[in-house]
Amino acid sequence: MKTTLKIALAVLLSPWLISGCGRTEPTEHSGHTSQETDYARPEAPAFTLTDHTGKVHNLADYKGKIVVLEWVNPECPFVVRHYETGTMVNLAEAYADQEVVWLAVNTTSHFNQEKNKEFAEKYDLPYPVLDDHDGTVGRRYDAKTTPHMFVVDKAGRIAYNGAIDDDPQGNKAERIHYVKNAIDGVLSDRPVTTAETKPYGCTVKYAN
Image 1 (tube, one colour):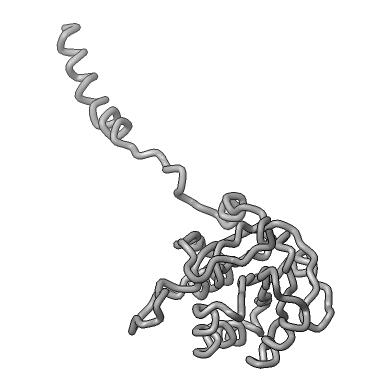
Image 2: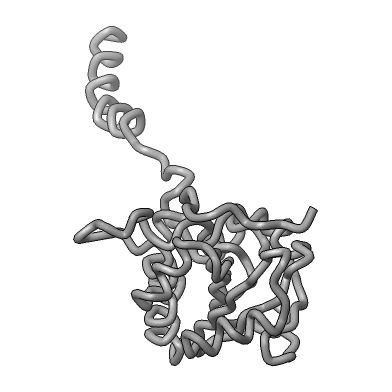
């Protein structure tokens, strides 16, 4: 009698036991929120720099906006190509009315405000060129090449760090626009799928 009761009880409980053992717990990345995304992003180093017109720019002044930082050297062939084809200017203008601020940073040691002004006027830039010829800000960001791109989200954290695209030689019919994709991700409050790439271009000409 006891044996029969045990068998009946086991039959009744078996579906519950099986479903319990087979249950999948939520993974660490499920239910990912924008707050968790922001927490995972490193904070962008603060800086205060003067642009080619003499205006002072403080990164903290742009909190609540998306900031694109572009390390630039007007003497670098990679930079020249992107400016001759309008890569940077066109992208900056495309997002100008969407709370996106574009700042070019020139860490080239032998440049100064006057040379930056000549560069800005030559290409009729719609954004400022910041003077960092002593390399202080470049080193804070570990800027390696020109161009080297950073996208800072509205909370002041780095959402993207790396190349402008996946086309170093400029000969691809179709290319991945890393910076554009990062901006779109931040604007849509989505995780940036490619948050870091290897930048290409000329090495930053730091002061010794």
